[in-house]
Structure formats: structure tokens, C-alpha cells
Amino acid sequence: MLQARGIFKVLVVTVIFSTTIDAKSVGITSAYSEVQSCQPSSDNPIKDFNILRTLNETEAHGICYYNTTENSICLPHYEEWRNIHATWHHPESGGNVQQQLGRSIINYLDQHSHSRERCDKSPETCDWCRVGGHVEHYLNRLMKKVQEICSLFAINELIHTGSSAEKTNIFRASEFDHLAILANFRQSRSDPNEITYTGNDPAHVNVTGEWPINVSKLLGIFQKSITEAVELIHSDYLSAPTVVLGKTGVTMYFFYHRKPPADAMKISIDIAIGVQVVGNANSDVVLVPQRPGSVGSQQWRLSYPTLERDMLLKADASVSRVYQLLKFLSALHHSRDNLKREIPRKSSLTTYVLKTCLFRYMHLCYRPEENTWLGQDALRHAFGVLGQFPLNSTEMTSFFNRDIVEFNVTAESKKAATEIISKLDKMI
Image 1 (cartoon, rainbow, N blue to C red):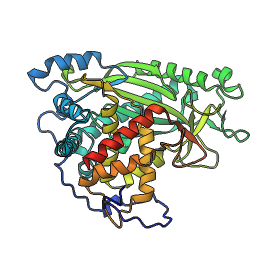
Image 2 (cartoon, rainbow, N blue to C red):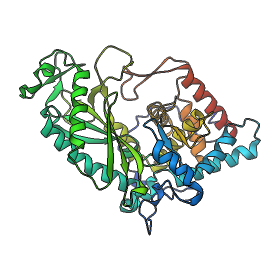
Image 3 (cartoon, rainbow, N blue to C red):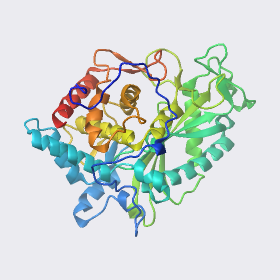
């Protein structure tokens, strides 16, 4: 399909994709408008994040400010989204309308996604990074207090992961993921799927003395320690904390604001716990808690957080834009029957699934030394990426380790991938 459209000339050779690509050596051009989210702001540095923009949005402001939950995100510029939503879910639209839809989607992302191109040039003026910087500063202080409360959670490193670290956020700078590498635990030498305690604090022998160490108990103590610590650490930017137990760690919800408080927006911060793997001095490969309902009976699984992050950061910005586009289309498809300003944060095509498909597509088609991905080809590349979705399988394995099943392919996810592919085919 891609060759028939004249996009690539793919040589049938074996090429090993390297994560050491120098993005600065590749020039990027774009046929679309410049991204606005990282432009400097003259009056209010976070005006792009204020939900209340005009008098006409007063009602929407009340809804988003008071009722935004942990499972939803309040859309910026809702009228633009609603127009895109109506066209996307209207199958009778002709070719010209579909092409205009593609331009509208790209323009929306230009305004409401983290721009690598501008951010790399001038990070000090990037509002997305500014919010992330305040979060990072707060977390460093918080984790020191957590260690004082419970030595089990002394850490070697706090790794910034996920979309905010990859600079691939869309809609709002509202989600921040981190991985705390525990200093007093190591991978077990006798059972690589379990961990052992290497510290000497007898206070929690009921946890550390067990074999295997119960990850549910460990996470429960982690939540309790975080809950105590947030009451002791003050921030000028974060207020009204709520702490809940997550699947692999703890999730905290805050209002992020400058003065006055009316500028507040809700953000979530995930802190997962991780343990170093034997023989791996850095954090490229770590053990993290197994997600409930995952394949297998082990409590811990291998994860590759910095490899995932660095593959996107070391590729050029046009690759990140394709990933942002895929996340947008997934959210758009998942919100078929939702005409509200708030949409679910999660969809049937998870960011992990989209990222894995992207990495496999990059392995086949990303050759920055030969041909740079251009902005005007973002929709075509998105079409190619979804071609890597395992429609004929029930499982999706890790890009970094094909022996690890990371995702159970559901009928719902297959339907979503198929329908998005069909719509992209009309748009390109």
C-alpha cells in the first residue's frame, strides 16, 4: 500500500535500528503552521493552560475545573475539537472534506501539543517544560521526605518517563510519569522474576522477610509513605493533593497554578517503583511491578523505560509528531459517542501499543541519513505505523524483547486500528 502511494522505496535488506541517531544533524521542514505551544508568552507564562480564556467559556471552565476526574482530560479549544469530531465520524464526507480534515487535525496539534522543534531550540520559553520543571523540583523534595519516613523507599534515581519526558504530550501538560529505582532492593539471583531486600531496616521485616516479597504489601506501604510526605512538602505551584494506589506505583492528583488560584488546572503524577536488574549497572532495563491481569503469574516484569524515551528523543521531531498524531486519532476514535468537553485519558489503543507499532515501523522505514520524514507526510506515516498492529494475533510482544507479552490484543483494539486505518486511507 505504501509503495503504491509512492512514499518509500524500501530495500529488502536487514538493517539494525540504532538509538544513537543525532537529531541535530537532520534538518526538518514542515508544510504546516508553526507550533504555538512552546512560543514565549508575554503577559502570563501559563496562559496556554488557563481553561478560562473568554467570557463565552465561563460555563465550560466551571465544568472542567470542578469536575475533571483522574480518568478524563479537559480539551482545549473545544469548538475546534467538536468540528473535527463531527467530520471524522461522518463517513459520507467526500475527498476534499477528508483532506481538509487532515489539515484541521494537524493545525489543532500545532496549537495543542508539545513541540520538539521549538522546545529543543529554546526550552526556557516552553510552557510544557516549565510545568514539568516545577513538578520535577517538587518530586525530588518529596522523595527525600519519603525516604525519611520509610527507608524501604530510598532511591538511587528518579527517572522521568512517559510522554512528558519524550515531549510527545497532546492536549495539555497534565500527565507526568516517573520511575523510582529503589536503592535497597535487587533482582533475585535465584529467581529473576522476583526481588530481594538488601537493606538492614528491621521496621518492615513482615514485608522484607517474606519470600517472595509481596509486591502488593510493598505498594501499600509506598502509598502510605507518599500520603504522609505530601502533607509535609509545600509547593507554590501544586496544591490540593490526592494520593491513590496505582497499578505499578502511586498516582497523585494536584491543582497546578500560579497566582491567582483561578489559573489552576488538574494534573496527575505517576511514580512507579523499579528495581535494578543483576548485571545491568544503568537503568536501561529494570524490574517493575506486573500490571494486574497481565499474562503470566510473576509479580515483576522487565521494562525498558529509558530505551523507549531515548528512541523518541534521539529521532528527529517529525517522528514525535507522527506519534502525537496517532494518540490524537486514537482519542478521537475512542470518543465516538462522547460529545462532552472532557474525554477519557485512556483508549483501546493504548500509548504503549501505538509506541510499539511506531518502533517497529521505524525499524523498517526510518532512515534519517537517506530521507527525512516531512511534516506533510505525517498522515501517511501514521497509516504505515498502524500497519504494524497485529490484527491477526491475540498478543503483542515487547519491541525490545520478543519473549515478553506486553499486551493482549482485544477485539475492541482490533476494531479501533482497522477503522482508523480505513479513515486514514481516505485522507491520504
